[in-house]
Each structure stands twice: as C-alpha cells, then as structure tokens.
Image (tube, rainbow, N blue to C red; front, side, top):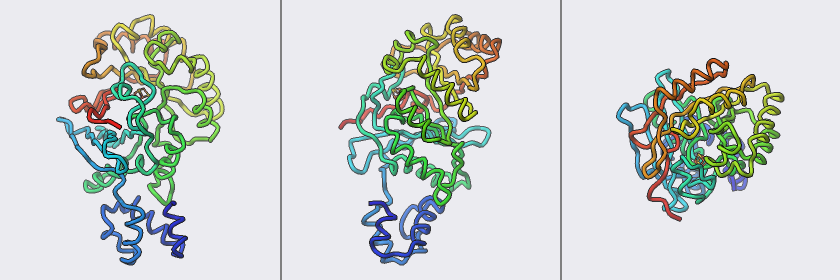
Length: 339
Ligand code: SF4
C-alpha cells in the first residue's frame, strides 16, 4: 500500500499527503519528531506502517581529497544484501549522486567489480530514492543541494526499469524533490528491448550508453551482454531517439590498455559516432583488485583523444574521483554481500 492509499484508508484529508511529501522530500526530516505539521497520533500510526529508515548505513568513507564519499548500505528487508552509493562534489559546484539500482548485477562486464557479484536483487523505488535522500540530508547541513543524479552505480537500471522510473518520479515530482528531469541520467550497458520501452515512454532525463568498443566483436569480448544486443541495433535505436527528441546521448568508453585504446580503435570509433548528436566520455580504467586489466598510459589516452578531436567528435576525458576509497567508475562491489 502506498502512503497516499494509507492516508485515504484512515480518512485523512488530501492535504496530509502534500504535508508528508514536503516533510520527507523537501524539509528532509531525519525523524518523525521534526514533522510538526502532523498531529502526534497520526505520526505514530504512519511511523509504524511507513518507517523512515529504508536503508541502513553500514560504512561511510570519504576520499582524501574530500571530493568523493561512498556509503555502504544494507537493505532493511535483508541485512546481508549490500549496496553502495557515491557522492561526487565537483569543483564547479555540482553535487552528483551515483545511485545503485540493484544489489549486484547480472550483466557481467569484464572490467567491473559489481559484475563479479552476479545478480542478487532489484532495489525498490524507495530504496533507490533513499540513497539520494541520504546525501540530500547530509548536504542540507552545509546549505548545499544535490544537483545531479546518475544511475551509474551497481546494477543495470534498464533491467529494473519500473522501480527506476518510479524513483525518478520521486526525484522530479514538483511535490517531492522537484529536480529537473534533465539532471537525471540513466546509464545502460545497451539492452535493446528495455531501451525501446524507455524511449517509447518519452523519458525526459538523459541517456548514457556504455559503448566501450567500436566493433561488435570487440564489444562482445568486453561485455557479454553485447552478444544478444548487437551494436548495429543499438546505433539504430540511438539514431531513432535523437531524430525523435533532438536530445544528445552520452556514450561511455572505458579505456583498457592494449584492448580498446589503440589508434585503430579511435579511428573506428570516430567513424561510428561522427556526425551524431552525442558526447563521448572517455573513462580511463580504474583498477579493480584481482583483475588483470590495466589503465591506458597517459600518452595513449592523449593520442586517442587527439584522433577524436581531429574527427570532430565531441568528447571529454573523465577525471577519476574517489579511487582511494574504491568509489570510482567500475570499482563498486560490496565484498561482504551474500544472499
Ligand atoms: S558496468 Fe554496469 S552493467 Fe556492467 S556489470 Fe557493472 S554494474 Fe553491471
């Protein structure tokens, strides 16, 4: 039962729901005592049915530079199921939360620590929203706000699409967190069917597609999911999306030494994306303990970038944040997790 249904069932007037949303999502209360707009009796009833605590904080790490924080949460419904969420405090003032949509991930990208966990559970929309609320409450104490949300944590968001979209409603509803949809990015490994569903829903947020290779064969060797989701089909979908919305898509490309970072890869990549309304993010690989993959040399990254520049492909080499606390891209994995 939703909170709206519950309030109706106990004959509370409709303004109570608005007050609830304001308290939870705007006032960012941390306990029911702060919610003085409601009579104590009503608070006590709702507290039993809808506890404020949606996730339990197990560990909170802050990077040496203090620009990245990572929180390890456990689920209330199963304290052995763990997930991680990252806050990045950018120098330009943006505060981005990188949320998880799952515990573990079934996709198994070869460069990603989460992929080694396999699929454990989908997170509910409340559990996804709670990751953002946790940092929103923290930033509020510093008179700061979350400016961006990216679904780039643990899990493939398009394989938990219903809950992900419900959480985005919480982030963007004017009665709730009231963020602009353009501040929310769903990042996908590229799964054709749910991409079609998402595009058909007239999604107002941003899309990031993990490309990671310029050819089908290389992509399959890095990302097993690519076998059933052909690069040609993904590019066709991207073209349709851009034609329909005139919105830019981001492509993510993790640079793996001697695997996808050679001159021929950059040239092929430029051919693949040139002329499209896209922005390419080059992500130097962040080492994961136990993996044999290596980060591309700085010179090689510069050469790769120069080829793209020459081909007029808009791109950025992403600056890694939070490596010292294993919070960077591809490093999230809750070592203690079990079912
Ligand atoms: S990169 Fe994303 S989709 Fe791939 S295994 Fe990791 S969490 Fe899953």
